Amino acid sequence: MDHSLGSFDCVVLNGTVVTAADIGQYDIGIRDGKIAMLAPRSSLANATADRVIDAQGAFVTPGGVDAHVHLAEPELFGKGRPADDYTSGTKSAVAGGTTTIVAFAPQEKKDASIIPAVEDAARKALNAAYCDYSFHVIVSNPTRQALDEFPLLRERGISSVKIYMTYEALQLRDNQILDVLLQARSTGVTTMIHAENGDMLNWMTEQLESKLLLAPKYHATSRPQLLESEATNRAITLGQLVGAPILIVHVSSPTAAETIRKAQTNGLPVYAETCPQYLFLTRKELEKPGFEGAKCLCAPPPRDGEEDLEGIWRGLQNGTFTILSSDHCPFIYDDAETGKKSAITAEAPLGRFRYVPNGCPGVETRLSLVMSANRLAPSRFVELTSTNPAKLYGLYPQKGALLPGVSDADLTIWYPSSGLAPFAITNDALHHNVDYTPFEGHRVNQWPRYTLVRGKVVWDRDNGGVVGEKGYGRFTRRDRSFFCQEELPPWDVEQW
Ligand code: DUC
Ligand code: ZN
Image (cartoon, rainbow, N blue to C red; front, side, top):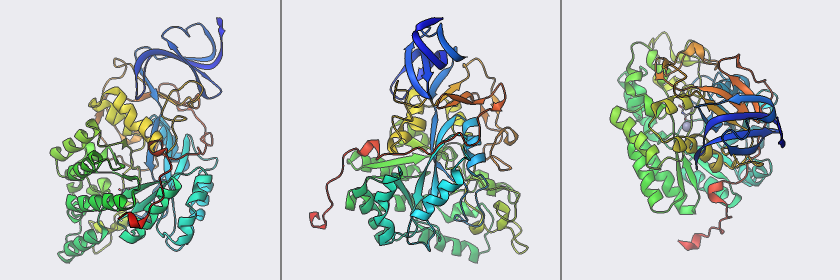
């Protein structure tokens, strides 16, 4: 043993360490839940350590940060409620290599305050999670009181809100969006925006219903790309009016992505997220016989074909997208009370698409699908799935990095490229609380072998599966966005 190095709780030897900035052959020493040392390969081979993980030939990356996860929420997106709570959802997360999630704390429209939403989410998550977590507050009623509470959010370690341009329970008008953006700007809060034009899609839905076109596939007809591009353009314009940074969530449309790219080129602080459903699924999934299409019914919907998928991959490769999240929003398929089948009635045996709860599970499959596609350079993969979400939402460099003495020892250790035969994803191997995955049968050749949260192995694929404990996951305080470190000067209407 080499005692001159001090002792470690765990060492990870012989891996190829990939961060957003770098790839190299390093050993990693972990102490008290933190990255304590990164040293040239083999230099920790004789160090004193309680646990040694040999990562020979494998990638070792900062743990995944999934900044878009719906857990334990009420009915918001059609009928039905997400079936995962903080326990099953985070169990699924660690089994897929994710070590931090940011879930949602939805304000009820009847509430003037946003604080009950935060307290409710905190109560649900306390002692329940397998990985670390935080919350974005969904603002559905931006009263003066709610806006005045943004500084309180910051005090409580929450630095982002989400708003919607659609959904009856959530949709804000443009003047309300401006109120939120202005207050977010002056309090160091990042605003996430769901950009679909709710009035247009309600009108389209009425048109389809009047022709009795009710089946799941008409969900996509009701929400063409035009609606997403219009709302994206409007969201960018509203942000520009008050000079507020915005993040457009779950972009599915290549046209919307191009609009975002143009805004970025013009220097606007516009960030964008996409998700695996817009890289791997198309509208064909919604056209499956019977009610089956409801499994892949989410909003925005999977788009028309390969060209659309390519457009989104291009945005990942060329830097338009800042982050890649799951939008995990799990509804049980075969459940007529709170699941997808709640949209089926005697009069509509194939369901009414307007009532099908919008969303798909994906927190566990996000990293494997994208890593296995092998279309992103390893450092870009880490940037999109870990480092950038940590930076964007004020978790960096505690999360999303491997800085000795600074970063939490959150790691995903992959199989050596020779170590895992390609296999098909099947729902029975997953850990969420739903009865299907939209990615059933998709072939992958990478899956996390180990997941470590603050130095503790919580997922050991070959030896016990999920070996972490419920309640180990902690609320993680967040600061203002790393992409917007400076306080912005006060906005003045007269500047226009
Ligand atoms: N879209 C989904 O598919 N699910 C959750 C919410 C959303 O906007
Ligand atoms: Zn959304």
